[in-house]
Length: 589
Image 1 (cartoon, rainbow, N blue to C red):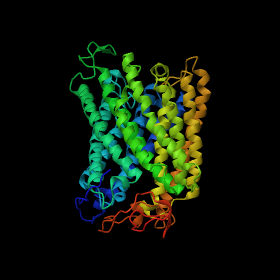
Image 2: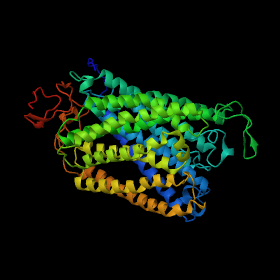
Image 3: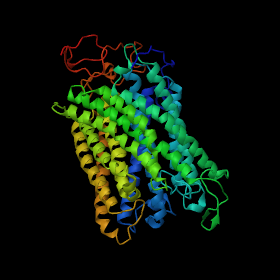
Image 4: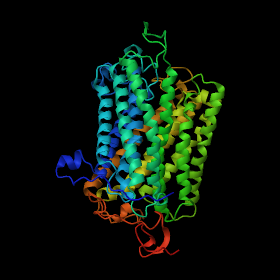
């Protein structure tokens, strides 16, 4: 891990107007807040969609007040049709995966804190940074537009499997303009993500301050850097895949559509395409996307746990090496999503092996976290509780991945709720717990105000219990053969499972309502929260060496000099049991 010289960021003057300061801002901190706000809107939209789906699953013939105004064809009289259920499922998955799990832990927190933690004034390319956010916002608007067109959103799921997504209106409601808008939205989102990834990489490599070697970067900075490297390749594959999908739909090409295909009594005018080509391209992006969501959360949680334990991890460098290994192996396992596609058994075995291998660095990280916690005097706060909750969700969801890594078992479980429970826990809820932990930890730095700790702890316990009540029963449903994406359970073997679904629905409604506590805490604290001390958590990294919130140019025109690694805890110094990174004082053990 070598040291690089400090380069000068592209200079831009302080904003002089409201639009330049708060809307089309070049300041990485404002852009980070914009990403966070967009993710907040998207997550509540996704949550409402999940409520609607859960209500329909338990009471399929019950009218949902107001739903008919969103779609007269999809919910006549407020009663959701099976096709509209699939449309809501598609939009829920797309919003959560792309606009929440990618935006918040990576783009939002990374934009705000990566430059500060390495001692830079801004990102390497501030205008690219602004373009990245507004391109993401445009992608979001294109996607949401699908709700308001006559045909409605697509029914192909967030994975948009061809040929369902490629042939046009013949394949069902929403597969006309709605599916085209979906493809265009993800295409635009890929452009934004590539711009952001290049910016993150250039900033990390070129703008580190004096003394900030790679070995002295905080773990969360490493996580954002590794994630940007993963995203650079992953989105570079998904972007042309979406372009090819759009061409199949509007230009008469046949990349994903085979010859002789008859849908709705219409012979499709295509030949020579392969539906499996879409699956290969999508999942070559799709599995790295899991780690684009989870690696930033791992870095944030590691950073918070070290601060809360008041002592270093058993080896924070091993954590970094494990994240690198996960990033590398993430490109070798996409085939395990295709075990049921007619894959050669030898190919299944080839993909099964790295799928099991990738659990090794994840297990090492978990053991380091747990071993470091053992015997520590943990400071209990809302941030540290959500960090611990992340560990619980990550382990609980990850254990079920061992079953899915075996082709013979996955063939039975693949199309069931078992998979839904697995990826919601290990990718969705775990990453969201990391987002919550980062919010409670860095909110004082971002706003200059403290969030309510009592409300934060209440929020944690109710959310922690609620998420287990929702997603753990999914595994039982999967083992019982409950097929996912069914909008109603009328088969004899599914009827006895309806009480389990009813329990899950009540848990989902409860857990969703609990998030209003967080929303109230966030908004109220922003305007009426107690003033934040200069360093409320007694943290050592560079973001806590400046006022809260930070000034426009971060360090007032002076580049800090780094003398220590970011985790000098459990030492004797003039500041207490910790030593700031920019302090020339030598620690005493």
